Image (cartoon, rainbow, N blue to C red; front, side):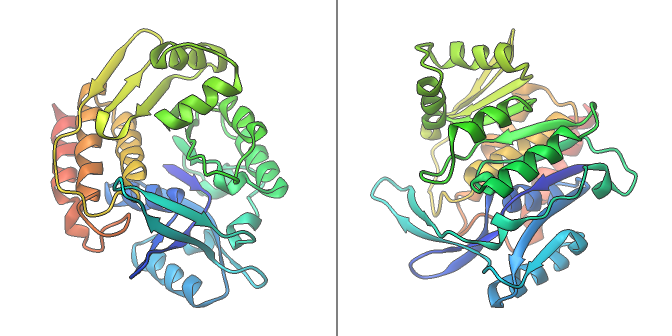
Length: 301
């Protein structure tokens, strides 16, 4: 079982809107890739929240874990495309997900089942309450439960205290090259990317660091191994959510015991396919069929 915790929101593009938020995107993908997923989040008692609730219900999520906030609106992000094919994000403050009330401990969510992985990020920790509640929730996990920290730093919405506390609980760390630069400056180090990744592994007892570098590809780094993958040329429609798709395939592949080479290949392909659609998640479940077939074949190989 995977537990994903954090924000779900609506991305407001110039001409359309899509449901998003890294934990939601991750949970949605992982569930459609065949995993048992629980998603802890909070939405507003508004039209956007109603649509999100219906979407989660339709896709088989346990909506008992979706909290309804009578005071705060569902999270919103104003997304503006930039000249490089990327996007600028204006994340509005005072969102419902800032007020998630976490269960006392992860086992309260699982219904008695074993939790293999808890996925979390940084945005839902931007308030003191969000930070304290999530960190306490993680502390109370079973020792066998792994933590996947998908750092996702958004300017003005994190602190180094958030990052440090989260790294101390991390087994799998995913970040991009800009976020690695922030950590390099944060700890006043001058290591190269691989050296810094291995410093994090040693210093925080992390098992895996996954570094994504946009068009330059990605790498999975451990204490004694290094694997990398390049990105094929393809037509990009929308890059929003590509990293979340990558994270989902990384987590699923790792839980299924696939090789790092296979995981990198599948995660690269999956995130590239997401870049060919509008928004972060596909509306048609048939989108996942080729990847389910690949996962089944790789797992049985």
